[in-house]
Length: 37
Image (cartoon, rainbow, N blue to C red):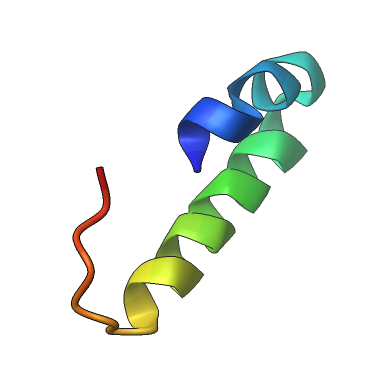
């Protein structure tokens, strides 16, 4: 997630970081058992 959104996160600051954190938390909470690399 971070690799795809990193440039935008850096450009827009706190909102971008909050979005990245939300997306990562949501993905992990799905509990699919698939490792994130």
